Image (cartoon, rainbow, N blue to C red; front, side, top):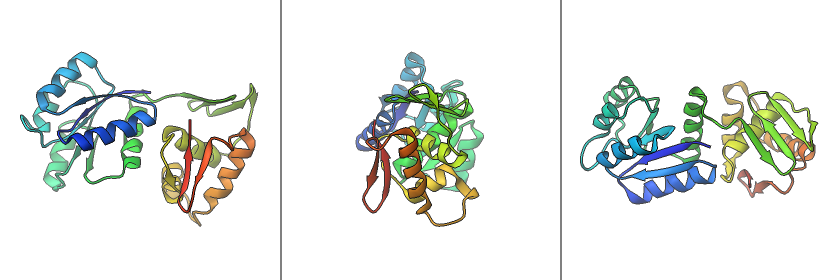
Length: 215
């Protein structure tokens, strides 16, 4: 769980980002202008800031220059290469161009949190305990052996809990470019995880799409 400051002047987008990140276990505060963002960053000391560039009172680059050492991800409609380069050269950890999928936002946030050692290390579901750092899974106190692919798939489901992920997204987030084959292999691994950990009532099938871990 991380504390995230969302700086976005469009209320509907701001709220959607908040709902998505809250569903995955994070705490969020919101700002709609640059000045609000600077006040919130000082008062709340968030773990990460999601920062729009086009703000009504000052642009995101000006905010970034005053925000201090808090990790920043730009989330903006400005997709020119010059803007991307300027954003990354200003010290931002990432640059996301609108429109984007909420799953992508969650994944990129996790990458930055991992980089700064601020991501969740231990997850619990019923009698299942997952220690990400130690790569250890137990059920009712007993160790459960998962393959590397099963563990990575479980980790992605946990990080993106309560969000439906397609089979293709699961492949990309869990195994990336290392995987070659049919995305239906996800089904086989999901069945194994369910059986080994007794998570049949938690890992839900999303018809003709993929899976969602409900906690």
